[in-house]
Length: 480
Image: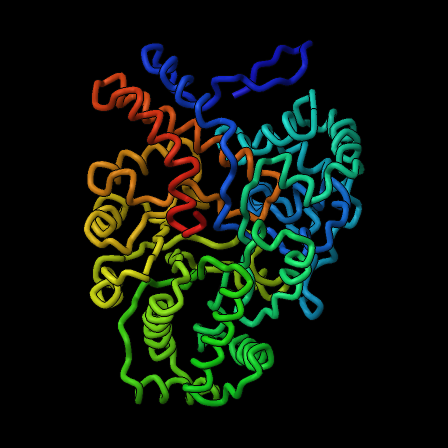
C-alpha cells in the first residue's frame, strides 16, 4: 500500500488497491483516473452537524482522529488497551475509569499500535489521511509519534482546516448528517442562514422511538413530544408527532430516513394491537416479544410515511449493539462493541415490498453486514422491485476485498443501476475522501477485469465508473 525505504520519506503507491494482474492494471488505472477527481456525494454519514454550524477549530489530533473512530478504538481494545486509555470518557453516572485527557498520551498509544492495522481498511484510510491531508512523511510508531502529532496539530491550527473549508478541499458536494427524530434542527437552521443549507442536509433517525422495550424509550418519547409540540401519550399522538418531525426534516432539506434496528421485520399490526403495545410501553410492562413486533410494525409505518413524503428509507439491520453490556453501562453506547448477527431479508421485507415496492414515491436502500445475503436475498430483491436499491458495503465490509465480493455477488442479478453507488457511513470526517477514493479504486479494478475479459467495452466501463462514484448516489437520494 505504501512505497517507502528505510531512509526515505513515507509515500503512498499510486496503484494501491488496484489489481495486481499486469493485463488488468493499466485498464484499471485509466478508469480510476476518470473518477478520481469527481465530487463526493456523502449521503449516509454521522459527522456531527455542529462541526459545520459552529465551524470551530478541531481541538487536537487525538480528538480528531483517535477518540471518535470506532474502528481504531476497537482494534486497540482487542489487544488489551482500555478504551479509557484512548480518551473515551465514562458517562456522567457511569462507573468506568477516568479517561486519559492528555492528547499526546492517546496519540502515542495509537502510533505504537500502528502494526495492528496491517491489512485493514483502517490502515488505508489513516495512511491516506496522514500523507495526503496532513503531509506526514514518517510512518507511525512509538518513535515517530510526537513528530507526527506536531505535524497534524500544525495543520489543524491553520484556519484553512476548519470544517467548512474542508468541504471544499475534500470536494464534498453534499453531505448528510444523522439527527435524532426529536431534533429541532437548530444547527441546520444556522447553516441555512449562512447559505449552506443545500450542502449539509439532515437525516431523520427514529430508532430510539421505535424500540419501545429499550430503557431510554420513554425519555426519547418525551423529547419527541416537546420537539413536535404534540401530545404523545397515545398511539395516534405518537404517529402524528413522527409525521410533524418528518415534515420539519423535509423542509430543512432532508432526503432520507435511517433505520438501524436489529431485525428487518416489517409485518404490520392491527390498529388495536399497536395501541395495546404502545400503552404497555407507556406503563413499562411491554414484553420483549411485543416490543419486537412493534418495531417491525413501525418499520412498515415508516415506509408508509416515506411513500407520502418521499424521504428515502435507509434500512441497515443486523447489528447487536453494545455487546459488552457492562462497558456500555459505564461508557455509554456506540463505543465499538457492536457485533453483526445473521439477518434474513426475503420474508422480513415481504409485507413492506408488497405494499410499497412498486410505489412511485417510495425508495428504500438496503444495507447489510451479513454478506451471505448479497447474492441469495438482496440482489434478487433489488433486481425486481423498482423501489429497492442496494447500499454499498458498510462498516465491517467496507474493505477492498469485501467491496470486490459485493460487486461479484450482486452485479449478475441486480446490475449496477440497482445499487446506490458508494456512501461512506462514517463519523470520521477526515476519512471521507479516503473512503471514496478506495471505493473508486476497487470499482475501477472490477470494471477493468470485465473489460479484460471482453464482457464490457472500455467506454461502457468508464461510464459505469462515473455512475458508481457520482451519478448513482445523486439519483438514489434524489439530489439531482
